[in-house]
Structures are given as structure tokens and as C-alpha cells.
Image: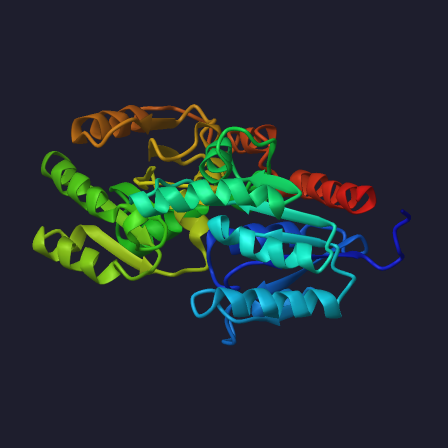
Length: 372
């Protein structure tokens, strides 16, 4: 089949275009693709205007609004089916809803879409017998709907598909130059926050149970007793934020913890920090770890972070939740003598540079389009 002069339009199925790991993945790749070849359009499960809507529409993308699966899966599938029948130009549907991918892809198959991609963006354990059964059923039924299996990491692929599928790993890539370490920014912000002489911990992520802020605050409170010249910067927002603020007050360490909220200059705080803590209970492949490493920031991460996401010499993974082990890891990394600017190059070599990876993904979409 010969390509039309018009670009191939890939329909991305997601929840909504608000700040989040999946949305960052989609926007990062879209922004670095050749729009004469590939354009992303979106199916979202909300009628409300979201923070990324203007960005994607300005970029030439179309947003389709459908019924949320939380309201009715049947209505969602019917809405999506109608869109696909009205727009036969969509011959690639890319589902980014983890275990709910199957509903998007079944609707796409019914509509005659040739390429139907299931993408796993996370890795988490089933919390009940019922959820284990649902996963088992999903893995049996998914081959009826999907033509291709993608994931952000090997662990994320195993989580969604089991171990039997041929999974293509698509890295959560970034603009590595944007995160190049700056001593000037580090000094400016530290001076502004009056933490110039402090040891600075950083956590970046939503306030939700999965990010395990409870353990982070407990660890920090214990660490402070022996290392009082330490501060913790928390970037993000979410439903658990109030609970964590109360926990910090109960420990009487409010003067040591900075709640920055949802900010647009997270890259600056990687410069400010001496070490970033990733205490998550589960992860797909955390973009914040990629970004922090590009800035040369040391990282201590839980076992939930895939090993392929930690390649710099100033990263350590803790296998359990023992406070002493985390403290030893932090102290070990603080002694590391590295060139934070030079280490930025490692990010490119590890396959996380968006300019290179976007070209690869662009080529993959075109191959799939032409080959089906």
C-alpha cells in the first residue's frame, strides 16, 4: 500500500489530557514527530476542558469526547465505534488504558481498524482474587482485539500481558538537553529558599497511595534525628496531600518539608536536590527517574522501579523497606563525586533521548500502517 500525501493519523485512547505519565509520554512523542508523516488525535473520557487540550489542538490534533468507562463501558465502546466509522482514516488505534485497553481495541476491531495497539504504562500487583481473575480473563481475550503489544518496560509488559507475548518496549523518552545540570539555577533557588547549606531530598509525583509518601515521611523523620541539616522538597498534588501534610505536622517537622504543589519548573528542582527518593509501591517506568538522571541527580529507588530505568552510577535500588538500608544508600550516594553535566550523555546512550526515540516510533507506526 502506498502512503497518501496526508499524514497517518493515529488515534490515541486515554482518560483525559491532564498532567500524568501517559499524557506526558504522548505529548513528548507527538511534539518530536514529523507532522507531515504522523499526527496524534485523541479519544478522551470527559467533556471537561483539560490543561493539555489547547496544546494538542494547537499542534494540529483533534480531540474526540466519549462516555467515560466509569459511567458505561458499553456506551464508551459505542461512542468509539461511531467515531471510527465516521473517520475511516483512523487505521491505527493506540490504547493507553492498561487493563481497559481491550474495550477500545474491541470497538476498533469491530470498526475494521487494521492496527490495534495495546500499551502497558504501569506495573502493579492485583490486590484481590477478583482482580486476579479479571487479569486472567483479560489476557485470554486480548489477542482477540490487539494486533500489537507495547509497554514502557519489561515489567510493565509482564504485568499486562503475562510472559508469553512478543512485547515491544517503547521508552518514556525526554528532551535530555532540557535537564542538563545548571549550578547557577541550583544556587539561585537554594538561596531563594534559604537552604544553601542544607542536604536536600526531593520527591516528584502525585500524592497517591501508590507513591508511598507515608514511608518517605517516616524515613525522613528518622533520618532527621541524626542529620538535622536536611530538608525535603515535595513536588506534586493529589488526594493524599492533606494526609501527608498532617503527618508532617504530627512529626513536628513542618519547617523541614516544602510542599511545592504542581509546578511547571520541576527540571529546576533536580538541580537543587542532592538526592531524589522514589518510594513507589509500583511503577511502569517513572519519567521522573529519567529526568533526574539526565540532570545528574542521585536516586534511591524502591524495587518497584524497573532496573532498566536506572543506569547511572549514582543510583541505588533498595529491595525492601528497611530504614537503615535506605539511609546507607543515601549516604553512599552523597559521597559520590561525579560530573553532573557529563552524566547527561548517559541518558542518550541508554535510549531515552526523545529526538532519537520519536524517529524510531514514527518509523514503527509507518511500518505498521503500510504492512496491514
